Amino acid sequence: MKHLVLGGVRSGKSAYAEEQVASFNKAVCYVATSQIWDEEMAERVRLHQVSRPKEWRVIEEPLALAELLASLNTPEQAVIVECFSLWVTNLLCLEDEARLEEERQALLKAVEAFEGDLVLVSSEVGLGVMPMNALARRFGDELGSINQKLAKLTDRVTFVAAGLPMQLKS
Image (cartoon, rainbow, N blue to C red; front, side):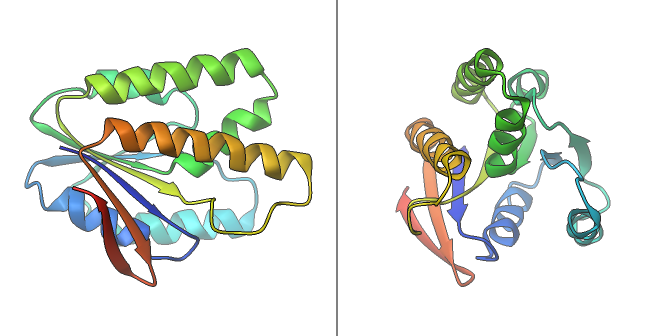
């Protein structure tokens, strides 16, 4: 099953997604897309690390998600990708339009072809005010677009607010 979990910052989406991937009763591979840019982010990553089950395999991949998902594509595997908002940020920071488009298209094909259980985590960007600067608007456009495409490719979509999951697609 493929499941997209959306929510805002501190909405509880990560905890909910981790519960979902654990419920498959399979070996779990946790794919982390974050990069550590400062001490505050390092602390966030550390807190995520200590909260995850020790038996979960963790792979850090900030850019080449499609290639990684292809390598993990087996029905015996449960994979969680945390999270697409950071992945889009990483790609935008490269300032390489060709790479962004290449990674986006490859990712969508990899998700569509994935045969195992897959839980994808992303931030919902469509509920806030219009950002004040061009990069923030571009981020919202790119992430909103990828979220819509992922929602079409997944079996389930859940929106999490205040720790409460709301099924959008099942």
